[in-house]
Length: 200
Image (cartoon, rainbow, N blue to C red; front, side, top):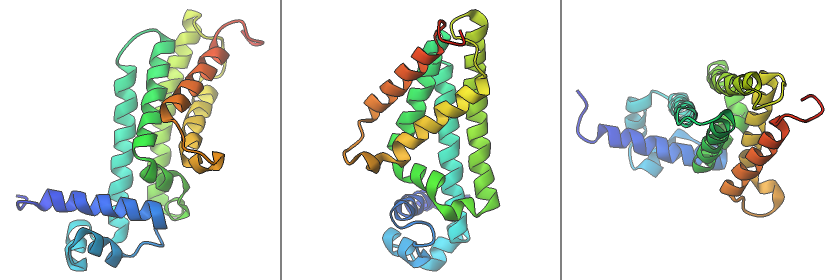
């Protein structure tokens, strides 16, 4: 049975740690800095998560789970293939915007990629999302709504574009309008998938 306030302490640890990891990187963030930011002792932090890696594991697991849930929910709203694909991409882009710090850690922190379990968790999630998008692309090709392209190649390109817009957000020298970014991606995707292109 959980003690009163235990869940809120765990949530505060994750929130503070996520912000520090995003700003300083995993290796640049000390357990003491996390504990001080939360207002707990280092032993109390270890009680909840066991280690700094345990905190990162929980953060990545939650981020990946939310990403899958958002995309699945968007696809289940129905509509034609173009609408479903647009909804899914918008959901993905919006989640990346809402959790841009964690998204940056998940996709760019070298410490994460050096950890086989964490790396596999991220890869497995992106693979599930790619399969979901590919299924919609394949269905659209079967019904004549989309031209025939390799569905998995299309899905991988879509996810890459959606990720890059956020994890590289500072390269343009100005703030990113996340809604406009999603709209541009969807416009480009749907225009490229419509029949009548060179492969259509």
